Amino acid sequence: MKVAVFPGQGAQFSGMGKDLYDKSPIAKSLFDKANEILGFSITDLMFHGTDEDLRQTRVTQPAIFLHSVILAKVLGNDFKPQMVAGHSLGEFSALVANGTLSFEDGLVLVSKRAAAMQKACEKEPSTMAAILGLDDEVVEKVCASIDDVVVPANYNSPGQLVISGSNRGIELACEKLKEAGAKRALPLKVGGAFHSPLMEPARVELAKAIEGTPFAAPLCPIYQNVDAKPHTNPDDIKHNLISQLTSPVRWTQIMMNMLADGASSFTELGPGNVLQGLIKKVDREIEAISLQTI
Image 1 (cartoon, rainbow, N blue to C red):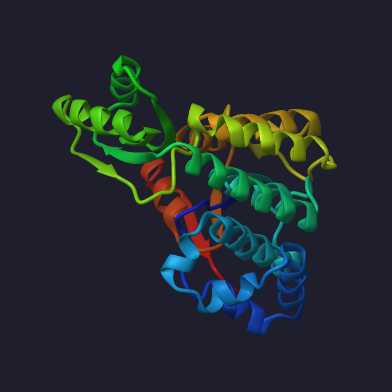
Image 2: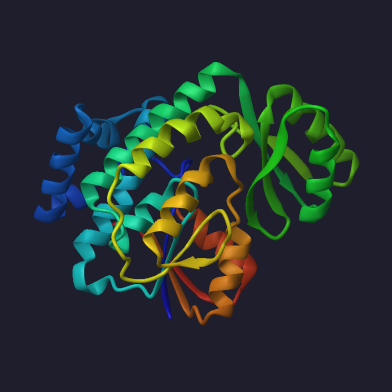
């Protein structure tokens, strides 16, 4: 079975999507429509922006979403996945790709998500760190033992987990995890503690927008971040999407569940090739490719 997966924040680069814009009239009209919806020229920032421009959450999230979704639209009939999933922000791209959300509604939600997360980050200084070379259970135990906010946020692949929390919580956890035998504990250059309880104000704000958006029955199941299970009921998808901001991304489990359910090839759509690499860590033999343009 064919699987399409969609990347999250961190995959952005200057020049992203420009090739699509130049080659495809469909892509050009969707990018132009996006500029109108957002009220600023996201294409200028995507095609010519500095790394600093693209690191702003309000720019990063719509930019990655647009690159992924517009590529899927341009592929047209060549794009017929039987399962989809997206990493964090990528879940919104996946929901447009499988017909649950319209392009316009998806973009509006992503823009609101970015603004809400930015606001939550400014409220309390917080961060994330990548932990390499430890079992998930060890990381979970250490996080639970710390007297500050710190939680597992992204289960990316076996032996690679990202933790999220207050600056102090992350600092203490990194020390303890190194003592517990972590190969590396690397603080990440991110704006805040995504997928942690510190995102609760953003979750509340985004929940209102999600509740007011029509969700259609999807063309194929989406394996969602919060429980790693396949969903086709629009109400369940909505509920899981609302929980996503304060829950961990269970990417390792999503990959394992997809493989168990018959996945035979994975295509990553959008900027970067991070997900392709993570898939290979779960199953070295599986066919996995990354597409950035047509």
